[in-house]
Image (cartoon, helix red, strand yellow):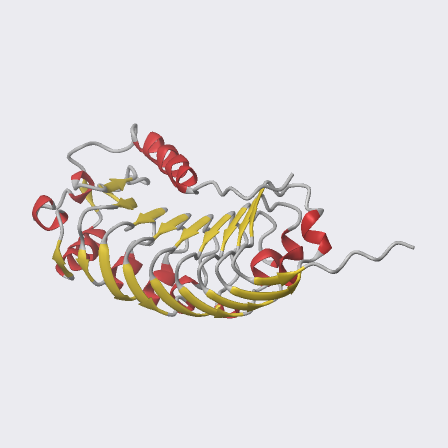
Length: 271
């Protein structure tokens, strides 16, 4: 039942993105202007960057829905403008910090800034993105705590902030009732495992906490047993006995717990 391989979670993001794009194909018209507040937010975001392809490809007109990496809805209720629902500018060579203006894109459902060279801390205004379902900031140079920026994202289904320099305690993370994928790997998170991750969502399928500075035991993960399919906690400072309950999780397909200080109790001697 339990193997040591670990399947990348990129296909989850691609599935979400494909659904969003498909739903957008019949929405709006190419000439429809985007909401002026969204336009301002995107321009301020671009203004914070010091390098990257979008600086030159994003035009100065008001049709930001045609900009690279931007997708909009159709502007319902008779509106003449469209709202930005997808911002996907992964791997564009972006340098600079993430502007707090992105928190004004309150219809955003997917935000992907992965595989760039962004630095600095996450703005707390990101917590205003109440409709956000997919967030990917992986493979950047971002730092600091993340709790204040993620709290209140009740619609979020997938969070990937791996391969950065984030720090803090997992107990500071908020509750995400719809979360199915959480990847915090290759950062500097410390402290014990937060059982609230599984208590607040009974939909957790992939949990990757590997390559951090976590300590303590695995007992808090017993609450994930109804849905957990992949668990990776390798490369931490976890210790103690591996809970028997972990081996009886019927949904678990992939498990990686190496490079820690776990032990299994000795088998009783036979007479």
